[in-house]
Image (cartoon, rainbow, N blue to C red; front, top):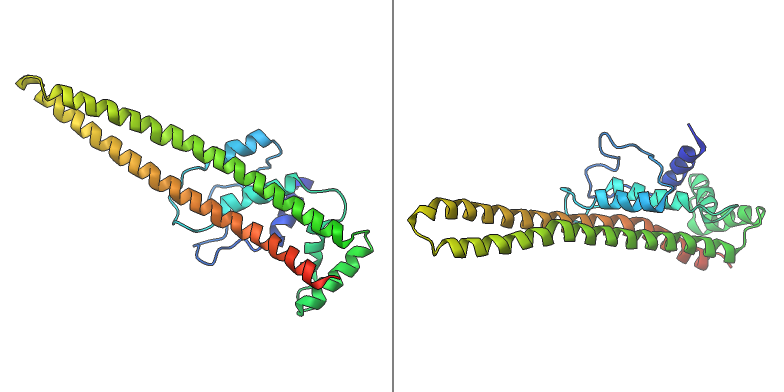
Length: 229
């Protein structure tokens, strides 16, 4: 197992990625736990390839959570920072149940590694920025899918409607062709509706996944600010 895989598993273990409303918090069958996405272009293409889905609306999706955590992995800062601090918090969670004491104790350990409160918050904000960048990539991919799957079908729909109007003016022998085109029209309408539903579901999945990870870091920043003086 390479270092990149170990690092991703470590980062993944730091976040609660299971949505209580989802069927499973594990990657779907056949999906690699860590494919590694060091390239920004490749990462954007992964969002593009996942921009439609049949999952339930509003649920986080393991594949999106993994892409977000891979982005954090790819942008992991050098030295002891928020991720290492969060790891320290997790490691003492079972022995120090009091949250206030736990945050302070983990910080005391972190200070021996040269970490300051300012650096801790700065590094946490760095990962929030990474997640916001991923949100922008996803939005670009989603818009790309809208253009490809909806606009193209809408153009076809207009074309078929015109064809039907023209053919209705023709004589009796064109009746069969009109019926064929009418069936085609309904198919395009159904495809547009299906694509719209899938894209809306996917958008809600990403936002739920994004808010799940983003909210945890944001909550940690608030607790760090509150508990550490």
